[in-house]
Image 1: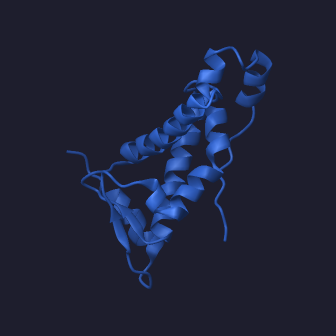
Image 2: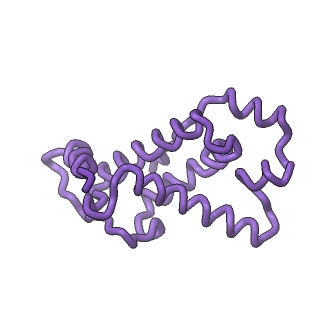
Length: 144
């Protein structure tokens, strides 16, 4: 079994001694029940989808890892921890990917093709891909 204690270590470090841990996020949680976290995903959706058109290049992998790291920190800042028995870094990253995948599928049902599907459908030019590949990823954190 992998050691997932780093997730709680990050949470303890980000929460600090003066903040209480509000909740442990379990396997079947829904992003919509945690508005601060879903807002983060929404704020980064366009950038995530831009990277997804690159079809898992090293740049996309680095971006996805940075996004996951920031999500874990943001959760901790709001007093949430990912249950270390249900989550590892990779499973948090997979949950983020699934969130965006659901968005892409819902847009497809509405007749809009985005992300890697747009590339496969020939809706993204090689010039656009080249430009995207040379643009570094940004992580956005919504402020209130």
